[in-house]
Each structure stands twice: as C-alpha cells, then as structure tokens.
Length: 612
Ligand SMILES: [Zn+2]
Image 1 (cartoon, rainbow, N blue to C red):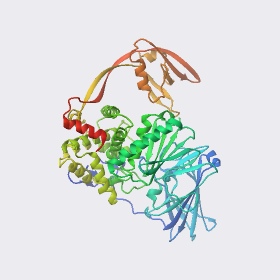
Image 2: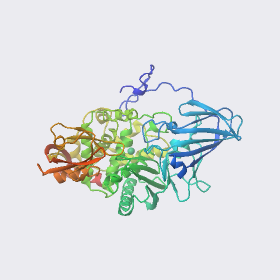
Image 3: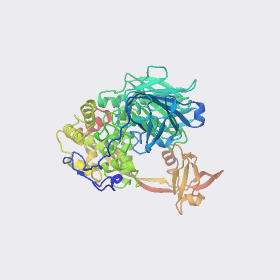
Image 4: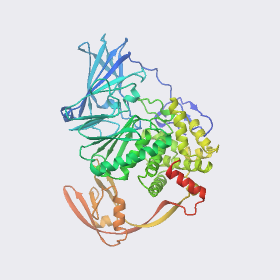
C-alpha cells in the first residue's frame, strides 16, 4: 500500500508491519505528533443555543458557551473539523462569527492558536461566558441549516471542547426558542425545563437538534419508544407517514435479531424533505439519524432502504467500530481501512432487513445485489481497503464511495462462505454478534485479528487469507460463478431493447436535471434538444420521479418509431420538442434463484433471506 497522500511530503515514514494477513493491511505510521496543547482546566460546561424567527431571518444560531475556570493559564477551546460518520474535513470554525468572551463582567482578551482553536485569557475570572453566532445555511446532515421556521444543527458544529483535557466531561445544553416551536433531539433531558445533558463529549456531539415547526409522533418498536420528527410540517402525513412507520416497525426487529439486542432506550428518526436536496442522504447516530431527501422520496422503498441503513449503524459503527475509530478524534482525519465493514456491510444488512422484515420480497434483494455488482464492474478496479482510506480526500475517479457497494458484496460473499463451511449453522450474523459482544461490550474497537479470527471460527476454522489478499486488500474481480451456486443462485445475462434518447445529464443545485451533452445523430439532437436545457418530462414521464427509469422503459420499451414528446425549460420558456422512440440493445445482468440448487444451497439461500 502506498503512503497516505495526505502525508506524502513527510520525509520520515516508519513502516509498521502488522502480523501476516489476514490480520490487516500494512500501514504507514504518521509523523510524530507535536507536543499536545492543553487548555487551563475548565468545568461546568453549559451551551445556550438560541434560534427563533429573529435569528432565522439571519440564518444564524446564537450560542453562548459558559464554564468555570479551575486552574491557571489561557483557556484553549476548539471546534471539530468533522462529524463522525461523514468522513470529510469541513472545519466548522469557518461558520463562527462575533466571538466575544467575557469574564467578571468585562470583555476578555483572545486570539487564535490555530484555525479551529481559540485562546482566551481569563485574567483571573473564575467564570467565563463566550457568545458567538453560527451561520446555519449548509444543507448537509453533518452541518447546520435553517429556514424561516426551522433549523437543525449537529453538536460538532457548535460545541467547543477544551484542548488536551479529554472528552469525559459532562455538559448541559439549553435551547431557547419561541412559543409553539418544538425542540427534538436524542439527548437526555436535563434537570431544568428546556435543558439537556450528556456525561461526555462523544455523546454530546452525537445528538443532532431540530428546532421549529415540524410533525412529531412516537410509537413503541421492540419495546422501546421510537420517535419520528419530519420537516416541513404537513409534508410526511397520512398514508405515507403510516407506511414509513410500518417499514421502521419491520426493519428494527430484523436487525435486533442479528445482535440479539436493541441497544437504545429510545430512538429518533429525523427526516427533512426539500427540493433543494438532490437525491437522499442521511447520517447515523447512536440513538437517532438525520436524513435529508428530495420530496419525491416520500412513499418509495428508497426512503425505507436509507432508513434501514442508518438504523443498522446504531449497532455497526456507532457501537461496534474498528479500533482505528475508537475513540473518535475531532481535529483531523481518522483514517481506517474498515469502512467496507462499517458502511458496506451496513448496506448489506439494510438490504437484508428489508427482506427479513417483509418490506420487500427476495427478488428486490437480488436485484439490488445485481445492481451493486454492475456498479463495481463499472468502476476502476479498486481494493476495498484503499477506497476506505482514500474517501477522506474525495478521489475523483468514481471510487470515492466504492466501499459501499463493494463492501456490501464482500459481506454477502463472506456470509455465503461461512454458511457453506458450516452447513448453514453459522453466518455473518454470528460474526457481527460475536464482535459486538467481544469488543464493543468490552469498551473497545475491533482489530483486524478480531475480525478475521471470528470469521474463520464461524466458518469452522477455514482460512480467509486468500480471500483477504484477493478481495479486500487486492483488486481481483469477485468470483460470482463460484460463490452464487453455494447459495442456490445464479447470474443471468439478458439482452434488453430499450429506448435511448442520446443525452448525458447532470443535476444542478436546485435539483433540476440539466442536459450536459447531446450525442450527435441521436434522437435528442434530431428533436432539437440543446446543452443547458432543463429536462422536465420524457414522453409524459417526469424525469424527477424516482421511478423514472422503470416507468420510461416500460412505457416505451416496445414502441420503436412512436412519437416521443420531450418537455424542457430553456431560459424562461417551456418547450415541447418532438422526438421519436428509438430502441437500442443492451445487456443486463441479474441474479435469480437456481431451480436446480442442491438442498444445502437452498437452505443457505433461505437462511440469508430469513435470518437465523
Ligand atoms: Zn452509512
């Protein structure tokens, strides 16, 4: 493995070899850390957060952080550079303004020690309060965003921590808002009305807050209170809300069965719907998740799938976590080769939970799996470990998030191989449960040796050295021809005739589908479509409909030569151009149950779909 690009200019690199695989990749040590900087000791941290229609008008959250100073020296306060789960450096200090510390009724001197650390001179003051504004205009589930009647923020954005003093300090949060607006968070209630309290910083910054007008209701799922808060009010209501509740009620038991435990006392599903979002994205926490979706996601299996993925994270990554990420640190990237387990295998279990819970049937699972195989085949050959490490720098070759589909497929292969080796007596479920009990419950992250020895034990002692070298640390294509028959499945390649218009599109910041390229000689060119046109409908099918592809193909898949109206917005005009349907052949790979499967393979197939 080559050195991490972030550090390639460092002259002194120590190569540490971990024990022979499958204990893990060879890692490159970082340059020695500079001596730690340390704040004067502080205690009794309180964060007062104000958001109402007045601050909303400025898209600002007003914050005051107050504390007692219990020792000499300057107070050094930092803001995180990232939010765990969103593996990218954002530097929340960028959104801070009007930083003004006071102590003993007087303004205190301050400057910056580095770009995310403030240095305050208490000058003898025993209690200090610092006011600042935080700009809430980033529509990103790791950040802070506001509308005239609503805001959400993450603790990583606003909650300063004292440098070099560890993260085991309790803190209180008080939210000040206006009558009729709600406050939703997974944080436990504090002693005073409107207050919340956590015992340590890791938990404190793992509970996003929603403030404003929204729809909220609760239900018991697996014997625990589960809350659903959605914005804007009136958006997720009626049958669509009931459907999401039904899906949540089905996937949580299917996931809890993997670990034989529901780890939270309460869980909150936070969902925002706005046309400003293209697609859907959510971020996991230990007892909540925050999703932001384009409104077209309402009522679709996609919303259920993302919801299931984030809830599974409550076990896998928020609790059971690679040792590289235990504990979290907030000031720099925390690289790991294990996102294929933390993200990819979470995705595998999200698909499984939908089947095992009865939200979708097994063919949907097989189609999703085939889609992932196609996605991996279309990307440059990339090792799972490398994709995981590189996500922090956002590679531009299409592999930035490859550890999701490819990690999910690696999980599927491991599941099949363990079930095959144990005649379906053991599975990947047992691996996840054993590590959860053996590592998370003992207060630590799992090591490469923990992972691979558990996999091997569940497979009756079978070695996974070869598997690791080829498919985790290596770039070899996955051996579907030998894996799928073990689970009574087979790959089928179909030749499909489908309508092709001949354009490439992209989505702009408003969510509109914009024509990026018109292929010469295509239907689109003959109809007069131009680069920059915003595409509204193809043959009366709305292009923003999440089911557009299927709807368009099923409607025009047999209509060679029929007329195809293309509705676009060009500047301020709405035009309907006249195209024709032209069918093009393409091959598509899918997975189907093999009717000739052996009884053992059929048992494995059914074990995967039904759980243990
Ligand atoms: Zn995830």
